[in-house]
Length: 536
Image (cartoon, rainbow, N blue to C red):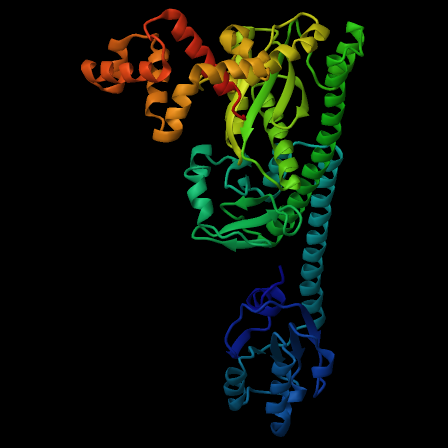
């Protein structure tokens, strides 16, 4: 920071001259340089921001006095210091008035001093401060270059910038969610209190700026027009210049980190998908080779491995680019969910809307609990994505061999497909959960099976086409309660005579006896077939 006129006047070498401020106003003007001259017209030698020192020769002539001050003001000089005694014995009365008119600070020295001492001391402080700024910028560059070379995590980069600027700092995404933070001695509860609300009150800027009701210092993170977050300093430190320098360099390091991680993740994911495909096809017959390659790709060695398939229902999108981005987003969400559950897995996109995993079991704790935690995290992550309306997870039989677990992906895929037609509520499904639905899922595309469903339900389907779903839904509810009419009356809030009348009408439509167990089984099976043929 450049020294001000007031700070320069406070130096001992100038105080010895008994300075007197004659006029001109603001002494907080920054001084870029000190210039000594007794030339009558010094304007061509100035670039702006100079404090001019003179022995008074240009002010000795009454006719040129006003023009000299006007020239200094037009050249944007910071101020004028006049030494009395050599060419100017006393201060002319019009000098102060002209200084006020031009708003050019003019100071008179009543004792002679050595101007060379003034220039040496002021220039030394200016150059020293400039050198300190250069040294600071170099230190910041070295710190973040080193972090980038080491592929440091987001939290490490945020910790580093907080240490450099000596202030708390937060990295947030575009949804105002905190990705990483360094409290730097400030209580976390205080730093992050009602963060989203406070953040939304602070406008997003395309450059480093101080904004918002709390005067937050912020800088965007990411390439121009592709920003994915911002760094926030809720309580900016004293040196705003240094804070800006460090903050902008940290933003560059974070953007580079994201690009490198995306590239590395894409390569790693392609390698994982390729390995999972080879394992499914039986192209790797040796367990030792399979586990060695899997472990090299990040799968933690375990006593048991679990095949898992994730299936989602998506809104149809004709834009193939957006559809591809959604698939990538789903895969990223699944991988992040596995990591957040402190587990490892190989993942693969086998087809749109499906992700296969080979999960390594925990060394300590229950395998079932571990699988449950992972599946809960996956479901939560996927349901936050735009376009995903439903998620079902199938879990195949665990195995002590990775090769056997990969073979089990066929089972988990089948279970996940069937689970999409089951009521939601369970974090995942196993083979014991799908039972009859699983069998029907295997044969539902057989025309004979579809013909059976149509024959069983033709009367109801025709009635639904003409009059709506009431009769169809009544039969479905009747089958769900196992033919218990009392329970059905309670569920539908109907009197028993009314219910009996409705069921009698349905029996006439279907031409079957609903009290007959075999009839109920056939109708239930037909409805399951009908549900299974609906697109996921």
